[in-house]
Amino acid sequence: MTGLLGFSSGYHAMMNCDALLMLGTDFPYQQFYPKNAKIIQVDRLGDQIGRRTPVDLGLIGNVRDTLERLTPLIRSKTDRTYLDTCLSHYKNARKSLDDLAVGEPGRTPSIRNTSQRFWMSWRQKMPCSAATWVRRRSGPLAISV
Image (cartoon, rainbow, N blue to C red; front, side, top):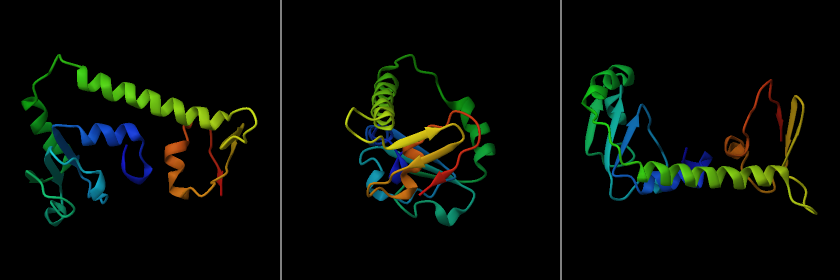
């Protein structure tokens, strides 16, 4: 996940990829597009393709149908170096956010979870950042801002 709601790991994964496949999205954050990757965009609305960034290949169609046809053409790779780097970066980013939620001695935790209710102190953070900070485990969730 990247953009305003994303983790740093999503940003690094996108910025360092060889190819970016955008499925049914009109991703609005131009600063988060990779500079040197091939970009492929699939959308059922042709006027959305290339609207935010130049694409190397634009495909007009339903995402499910397009993926059903493209998937057999993808070759498996055994080199997991890039994937493992991205997963490690995500694990570290997630741990940092989890540590903030727990809080440190002498600091007020950013997030308090008491059974079914959830409170967040925003401290100048945009409310839409809740998706970044919240890792829901189970049961109903209420956010009061």
